[in-house]
Amino acid sequence: MAGARETQFPQRTPIRARVDHAVIIIGAGFSGINAAIELKARGIQDFVLLERAADVGGTWRDNVYPGCACDVPSYLYSYSFAPNINWSMTYSGSAEIQSYIRCCVDRYGLTDRLRFGVGIVRADFDVVGGFWRLTDAAGRVHTARAVISAIGGLVEPLMPAFAGMNEFTGDIMHTARWNQDVVLFGKKVVVIGTGASAIQIIPSIAVQVADLTVLQRTAPYVLPKLDRAIPSGVKQWFRRLPWLHTLTRRLILGLTEGVIGPAVILNGFMAKLMTRYALSHMRRVISDPALREVMTPDYQVGCKRVLFSSAFYPAITQDHVHIETVGLERLTPGGIRLADGREIDADVIVMATGFKVNIAKSPFPIVGEDGLSLEQRWSAPGGKAYKGVACAGVPNWFFMLGPNTGPGHTSILIYTEAQASYIADAVGVLLNQNLTALSVKPEVMSRYHHKLQRRMRRTSWTSGCKSWYLDEHGENHTLFPGLASEYAWSMRRFKPKEYDLRA
Ligand code: N01
Figure 1 (cartoon, rainbow, N blue to C red):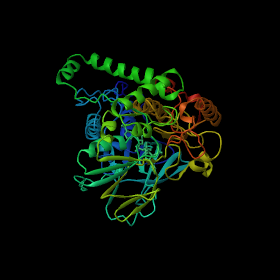
Figure 2 (tube, rainbow, N blue to C red):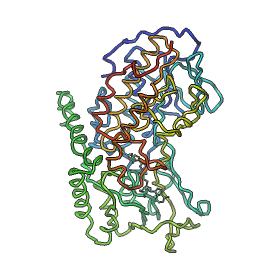
Figure 3 (cartoon, protein in one colour):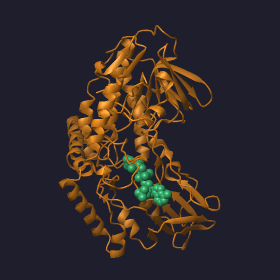
Figure 4 (cartoon, protein in one colour):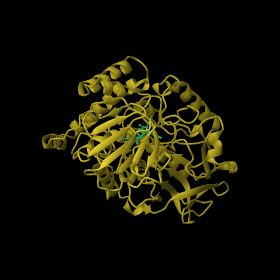
């Protein structure tokens, strides 16, 4: 638990250069805050969190569309060291998660470390001084001996450039940039997409709109979601017997690791069971054979993210909700035109079209040793990042939720906790030994990368579907091809011998 290892690494004053801070964390979402908590737990006090927005929370600050919630159970979607007994639902809504994040900021005394409105646009490593020079959008420079990049992987909305976007006279909104001022009641609405965001928004708005057309390109696998209010009696038991809460969390983790994980990662027996379960869920709700056919996925389960909702199928069986699988030709002043020439009137178009994935892409120029940028390094063969946290030639720079560290089956916080602890240990070595550079050995990174990609070939993610998990070459640099517990175990100890340490 963070907080238990107080002052493991006493700090020394940097001798080589005057820097603003020992550590800068970029981003104040779940992972950046996790990293900050771990630094503090080790007595590393000289750090700040630079956040380009005006509040903490990242994903949960930005996603406020109707029905926005987590599809991982509440007791697992919270830090293991900061259990929340007061979750109101078995699956939490975005507002409740956001207030949990704010509570953690208060509880771990991070408020005075937050710097809002600071968006980093460039980073340069000073090889002689052994520090990073970060330039923000206003041209200000921030320096630190180590940087923890916690910028999130699904941040920038993907807005497909449909023809006629400028002609449409109604409102267009992306799910991640929801405009609360747009009234949907009694309106004709088109939702583009049937991914994780869409299946939450569709049931939530179907009850208020006059007409809802959903454009589906690929049918998702949808499992039922046991979304229930948590009775106060349960909370009282958890308060009285904290171990019961811990046990519940472990049982949920066990379920995601033992059942959901194998089913979505590998094409085996569990995958077959999950396919049958998902299809029977669909058939139980949808009786119309034509709609059943449209909603039947044509790819291996797990290849795209498996979705959880008990409300999506009932919503699309309503008379005023229509699923269209014919492609979109263009937007018109009054709505949309489909590829078969049909016109559909719309007052509002909702883009539930996902994100520009930047998990294995350099978000801005990050120039490490030899004047080489991260983009140049990552476009060459030989690997992206060791354990997803460190890249050879980019010293003193650590990624939270970097390449190949995402899950398709469980809570992402299992990964962030493992990373935050590992990175804080690495930063501790850097500061304690007063090094100018701590950089993963190229051969260590390359070996790791090739092993990981060999395993990747056996996963459902590379079984032939198109998904945001894959890059333009069909390679998966987003997810970890194993269970969360395996990843966390591999991160339990920072091994200095795997790194080049320069005094
Ligand atoms: O985005 P998506 P999302 N024309 O990319 C369709 C996380 N998340 O925002 O499948 C027509 O999944 C696209 O079609 P196709 C989670 O990791 C978590 O829903 O590419 N359609 C698809 O149907 C998730 O995976 C939670 O054929 C177009 C949809 O738009 C990730 O965020 C909740 C199109 C995009 O689906 C992204 O989810 C919500 C086009 N040009 C999200 N372009 C939790 O609860 C795209 N589509 C934790």
